[in-house]
Length: 517
Image (cartoon, rainbow, N blue to C red; front, side, top):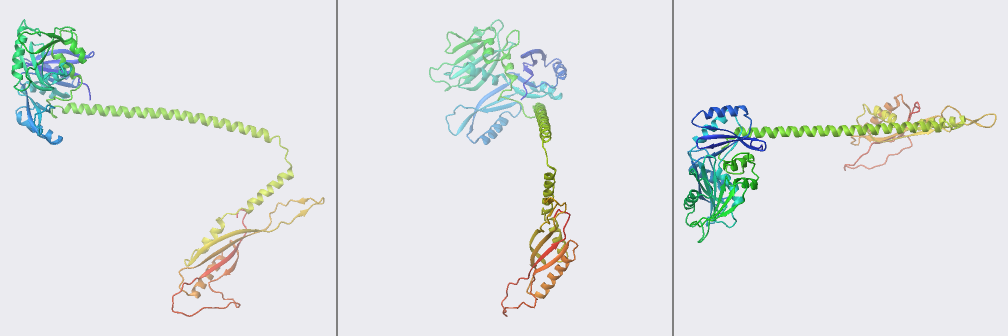
């Protein structure tokens, strides 16, 4: 999520603008609701409408109370809580709630906190200005809910009830009470002029009133002591100091605001310390709970967040693309280097071969014998191309002929040896005569016992072979039926169906080719 860069602090009919500068939120100006404050706020926001903004609402008209709900599954529990909040604060859109960890004493129920800002006009007057300028609002928060962080840092672990007191810059004082770790309520009142010290008589008197207001019967065990934390704006860098307050049963501790801010790592601007800066500084990162806004209030902030995520994704894709390009360039340089090395190696081998071969003494007769042997090997090389071409051409127009086997071989004649006058063999440039022989075997299909028709089909196929220019002779090895005078016919007469065969086999001699078979 994008960090918050601007805070609109709404309090007592006024709006103070804080902007993130130099590592902290710096006070820019304070505007009044009754003067021209909304118009001046419009000018300020229009100067930088894209800054991520949050609202901090600190007014008297804020309620918190506890209730119980039936214990259900998580989904139904949240739905029931939303209905209860909507019914409890039906006249304001600024409301929220939370399911508490506190036990109710009944295993069938859970404790919940319901919160609402009961005077919504105090927020709308400023929020409408930001909404008209499409300022990205990301949340509306209250100091009461943000006090929970102070409670986690300051409250004694054994305290049954804890009350935290903070003082704002306008002289108002806030008392926030917790039972265990759950928020009970909050009270705001105006301090007395001249008695603004954290442990003054006036503060102690108001402290006693708040404890009577918040601590209901049964909230504390008999003899228990509430823990009171007084945050003193003028306390300097002092650590928590226990205070003896005669007539009070509470354990009172005073801590200076700068020391507390340092402990919580909340950045503070230079200037007089004030209580609201403890809450404003927490909003640099959005809190996980206590947001009074609705989806319609945060719509521009949500769009801004999605745009930032999309932009980050684009930059990530671009970075990956650039990295891949750099990697591919490196590989390309490596491939070029390898290619150059291989080229250089080939050049060296070629030079070495030329240098070595130049020293050989070759006999011309031995060279001629080698050439003649090579030509003989080339001439006797067998390839099925010519034989398959003859067989496929002869099969055209004879769909009933089925070829089962094709064999081919070369019959080489013995070379004639001649001698010269010295009795040495004379090497002839002419190759010995050879014959290319192909044997075809197959049958007639389909065949239902009609030998006369089968014989005629095979004879027609034989004539087609004989008529081919590449064929020299065709010798019949086998026919579907032997019609020679030396043959005899044997068999029996029966009505039982038999399996019949009409097989044939030819030996085909082909004309010699140019030495490629």
